[in-house]
Length: 220
Image (cartoon, rainbow, N blue to C red; front, side, top):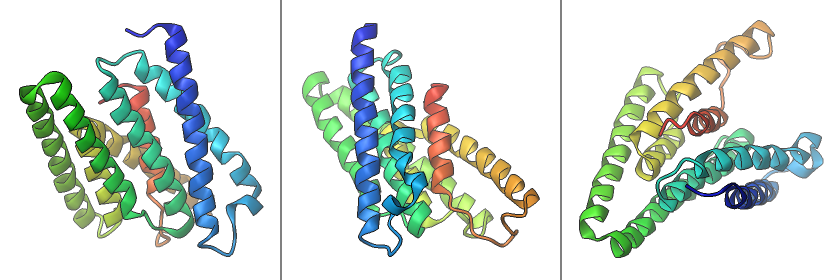
């Protein structure tokens, strides 16, 4: 179990990484749009928000993990979702490189686990990850069909790669929290007459909320 000082230092690092990723992602959007984030006052506070959440989740996770690899997997998933939220909110697109980065990072961790723990342990982790990824993919494809495209293919790719990285339990709890938060938000927007029934809803922010709650309650 890591000591408190070590936990704080690691969490401060996660906080700085979260803020940096938010800034870089926002700047990359600036180059693709005519209405840059840095001209909108709300985006001044966005890196701060992600940083505070990143610190809180890191502190929670790092104090309750079995291996450093588990911490890396869970926090890398959080970092990836920061980028997904910013892209999806602004241009309604989740770049493929986000999902690919999750998959490649998990594969690299496999090799390290193989070297440090042996082939048997690494194979067990590989099988678990494949089950998580495939199960997540199947569940989200079914949700896509039932929702008639309400959950897009970008969302499906994010969920499947998260399942490969973090396991099916993390994705299942993320999906539940995401759907609940999305439902509450839609009802509130309809009541306030800010949205109509047929209006499109960006889902990545709710995936972020669901994943953050899953980590907070250690449902992974």
